[in-house]
Amino acid sequence: MNVLFIMADQFRWDHLGCAGHPYLKTPHLDALAARGVRFANAFVNSGVCGPSRMSYYTGRYPVSHGATWNRVPLSVGEVTLGEMLKGAGLTLALAGKTHVMPDRQGLARLQLEGGSELATLLARGGFEEIDRYDGHHAPGTESGYPAFLRAMGYGGDDPWSEHVIAALGPGGELLSGWHMRHCHLPARVQEAHSETAYMTDQAMAFVDRVGDRPWVLHLSYVKPHWPYMAPAPYHALYTAGQCLPVLRSAAERDDEHPVLAAYRQHEESVSFQRDDCIRTVRPAYQGLISQLDHHLGRLFAHLDARRQLKDTLVVFTADHGDYLGDHWLGEKELFHDTVQKVPFIVCDPRPQADATRGRVESRFVEAVDVVPTLLEALDVPVPTHRVEGRSLLPLLHGQAPADWRDMAYSELDYSWRQARLTLGKTRLERCRAFSLRTERWRYVYWLDEPEQLYDLQADPDEMHDLGRADGSAAVRAGLRERLLAFLAARRHRTTVTDAQNLAGTAQHKRAGVFYGQW
Image (cartoon, rainbow, N blue to C red; front, side):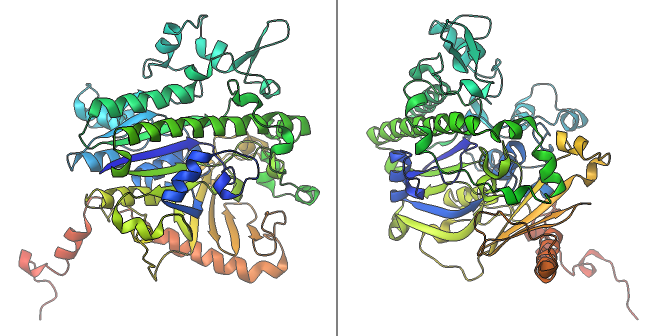
């Protein structure tokens, strides 16, 4: 069986046709959901690209893997999905974005900086890179996209900045997509040469090269993440009236939580507090999603033509959502469902999954569940002393485990953000927050700041923070205890397997140690 693990960047859970969006066209993802299971309560373990992806790649929560922010290297001591598969003779190929940063200090300490195969594997997070493309700045030699653009005739000093994320003004002047006011215009790049089209082509070429041998591919798109520049015709596919209503209320600005108040002063939040920004960006964002869906349709058709789709397990998800002006915020990071909840579809091609095809599953699933799911599907042992997620195969195969989780966990390290400076905080280790999301409650514990609490039954849009309300004290105390119990149970002992632990229990006399005898 092949595995196709697809991730989109900054893709909101409510921006799918099959999730109920009244206008957005996502026929190929809808069809994937009809062939598999759509998990309606899927949550990331961080609302930030880097730490969220490291949880997807290790099966461990950020508090365990330690890469708590973008560009924080994953420790060389952490083991990723690619390394777990390599130990079983499989290779995890990559086309697209990972946010993996090499732990150069750790590699140097182990004297692994010499370009050896192992050093390269560790520096790349266990991936065999077909084409590494993170999409936030002009790509370098890790990607073939710059050379591709030049071969297609795009000139200038930087084709990415001058064509891919740029438009032309009425006088022929160059307008940068970094300015969101320009996102209603078509990107200068032709659609067939865009980032999404290019990376889909790389995936299809990889499948062709591998042939009939089994493969495991992580296809990781940079869109619909900013810059929100869509090529024609996708830039004009939707109008502002075909976008979801903005979720925000004046009451949210009354007696604001201090950290949220600081985030609302960030430039991106101030921009998204403008109605014209929302009406400009949201249609382009939806266009980027429809474009991505179109190219997934190309890929699925290509696999079907090769008679491989019927033998390929497909996972589609995202690393987090996007506020787009909801709650008076831009970007992501904080603890609203707009950001923390993500699309999550799994299609298992095997007969064991036939009974659940087309099901919408309401049980809680998390980013950390991807690693154990793929390992079990490929008959690779799950390192249970490390992995903190749970395999989803029982749910995919129609089982109903009585002990399934009833909450999701997420966290934030905001020590890197302007909000910390706005709040005058100098102790970096205190700029942390930890959150639980249950069916009824969203609870956030902030170090040195008030708690947050939302009653999702009475307030599903999370408008009224009860974190400082006297009447919520008992609920907050109960959730605080659950959070403490959760954090105390993390798997920090990673150098000894569970099997070794069991075999070595109460074995001191066999080792010739006889303390305590009378």
